[in-house]
Length: 335
Image (cartoon, rainbow, N blue to C red; front, side, top):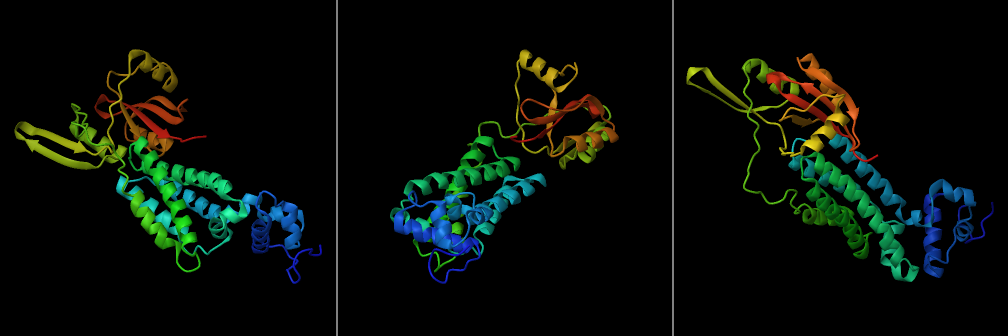
């Protein structure tokens, strides 16, 4: 196809050629008045070639950033799948993924559009599309922080702050002359502000939840929960008369209170008729099936095999050492 645009424009389609043509037209006649046909005609390529690179006019502006947001999402999901040791680790992962998003980010059509939003008729379009990217980043960050042990409400709030920080940094970078400085510097400043969001609510009067269990066969119970289940020993003491106690770290502690109707409902969903003990321990893991196999090999008995619940978790019911009833659950996340 011969070009009907500027003399000397390459006839071969490319992302850069199309983006340049689109931005010229947005400046000349506005975003809404510019059609895809106008862009391909100016670029000297076919309509089908346009869709080899972009899904829409808006995608011309956002595709470069979208690729980096996708990389951030994948990086944070991979870190979460590996198992977070603490909120500090999760925040460090979020900061690293955010800095990676800005690495070698060259000025592109998005930066040009931010600076010339009024002239291009893009003010509302940019606001609308920026909100979508804030939300994507926020969801990825919140999920990572939540998997790191953060309270879900505060993880969502912090995720929103990180999403806003990234978009604000990009806008500041563009307005301050994207070609004159690195995006990473602006992201670093914005990340410092986002990281100030506390992940947990203010502490109440209870500092720790500890479940105290009488274990007749102490050594077997200790080996099962410490070595098989995977709860590191944080403290241990001995006293006269052979008294022994070991305190094991079980991660974040919560107290779930259920009325009889709820307990009966959970038993129907989670088992084939197994009744809950008055106190049942629920342990969140990364892999229910693998954990169940490991616990059974270590001496646990299966009371109900793994099954997906209506609230998107994979649950199994076991009888562990010291006659404790255990629910092993894996959060599956949104469909």
